[in-house]
Image (cartoon, rainbow, N blue to C red; front, side, top):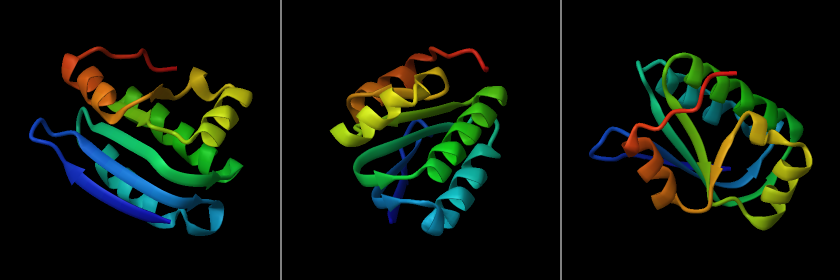
Length: 120
């Protein structure tokens, strides 16, 4: 798995992730997300354009971090999942916990608009 992070001018942390997102290699992602979530009112977008495999441990990590970010008044948004990943997310109904957008630009606009989802 590879992770490329950059911060936009409006303070949005964008993580572009590629490869296999599985339990044996998620520690770096976990640490990077935990650091970003510590910021008050964090703004996090995960771009899954290049993720081709994800396992249940990774899905659990992402749901947990999304809930923590929202509870702390922040954003934790996903965008551009590959069709197979999107189908997996639909099958396990992660839409209850994760906000998923078709494009990175769409995700950025949501964060910049100030629209918020209520914590669950």
